[in-house]
Structures are given as C-alpha cells and as structure tokens.
Amino acid sequence: MTTRIVFNNDIIKFMSIFQNVTKTSLKDCIDSNSKMIFIVDENQAGKAIGKKGANIKRLEQKFKKKVMVVEYSKDISQFIKNVIYPSKVKDITEEDGTFTITPIDTYTRGVIIGRSAANLREFESIVKRYYPIKELKVAQ
Image (cartoon, rainbow, N blue to C red; front, side, top):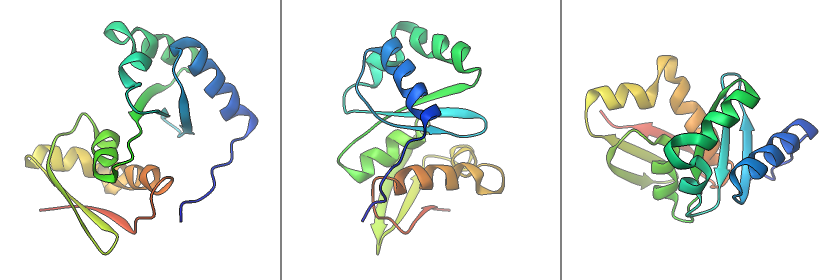
C-alpha cells in the first residue's frame, strides 16, 4: 500500500509554476534541500525538459535550485531506471520486495549510492511514494 501524498501550499505553488512553464501534466513534486524533483506523467519528460533544457534552466532560475524531472511509469523497474537516470544499469531484480540494481560499472555504482548512501536513500524514498517496496540495493 502506497502512502497518501499530501501537498503543502509551497509545493502547490511550485507545481503550478512548473506546469505553467512546461505545459505538462504533473504527478508529484518533492522539495529536497539541494534540488526540486518533479514527477511527470508517462511520455511527458521531453516536453517538460524543453528544447536544449530551456524549461529546466528557466525553472532553476525561478527556484534557485537544481531541478530534476522524473518520468512516471506503471512498470516499477522502468520507474526505478527513470529515477536513477542518467546512470545506466544492466539489470534490476526483485526478491521479496527488495529491488537490486546492477550498475554497468564501478563508477556508476558509486554515483547511484552516493556519499553515505545519500543518493540511494533519496531514490528509495521517491520509489516508495508510489510502490510498496522494502528497499533498494546496489549489486557489487
């Protein structure tokens, strides 16, 4: 069972600005300390980003933060790939609610995990907003 997502006034304001700039349908907005993460509907990421990233640049100037766009997918493995993009993976496997990501090389593995596993936990929290997973892991 996924958790119910509740938005405060600031998040609703950010979502409205995002939709006005990008003209896309938006599912979610996550405001972390260093960046804004927007979850758009399927097949909307390209439109949200804009030509040569024009929409993203405009939004980053407005919010004074990095902006990340993630495309939602009904397929959980594809959604995980979208969340960790631009990092490439060989495979994503599932066992008892734990999803294991197999990166293409050690550099990619480090990027996905991040310092003190910060990136991995952030990715995990995004996925948990939509899917009832136990944990995200990165294979050796």
